[in-house]
Amino acid sequence: MRSSSDLTTRARIRNAALELFGIHGAGQVSIRAIADAAGVSPALVVHHFESKEGLRRACDAYVTGLIRGEEDDDPLQYPAELAALLRDSVPVRRYLARAFLDGSADAAAIFDGFVEVTQTWLEEGRHDGTVRPTDDPRARAALYVAWQLAPLVFDTHLARVLGLNDPYEPDSTLRIMRAGLHMLTHGVFADGHALAAWTTAQAEEDSA
Image (cartoon, rainbow, N blue to C red; front, side, top):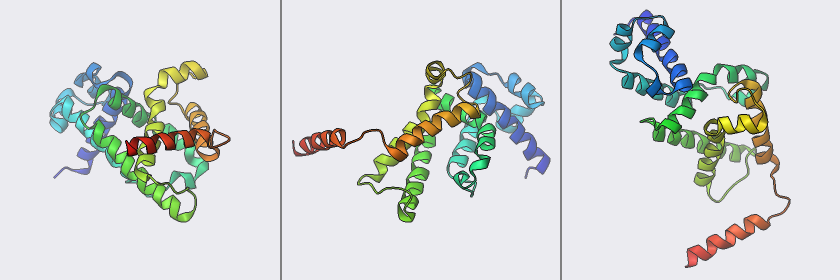
């Protein structure tokens, strides 16, 4: 059984790896660099995680745990604290972007976890009247997740087009998220012609 101090050291190493992997990509980060960032020896990194791949799996598991709702509070209930939450989550968001771009071993599990949590959240919203009903809740949840992750994957392009210094910093994320949520809340199209066209196309495909 590990002591509490041992667990603290393990978490410090994991957090250092999470940040470095997110900035540089796992392939460009050495165990020595992680050890230096965590303030420990390379041997201690190996002792806790066996290898860099083991450390990467631990980072994936940590992020997946966050996605699956280890925190009980809904941050939307505390809007004044959102900026602080975004500041604290910068390393996690950078890591997520790299995980999807670099093909993390658990990238599929991370995405699936997002979809499961989001579908549950949207269904709860439908019951309490804050989310509109849909005839395809699974597709909506999956697309919602893809839209939320898109700014992480297209970070450099968003930064260029919107003139952002760092798309992961709270002020940038707030601007991007607010624009996206405005679209989801109020819509974009003034009438239903686009939806009608795609609905007709789907009906034609189904009957072919």
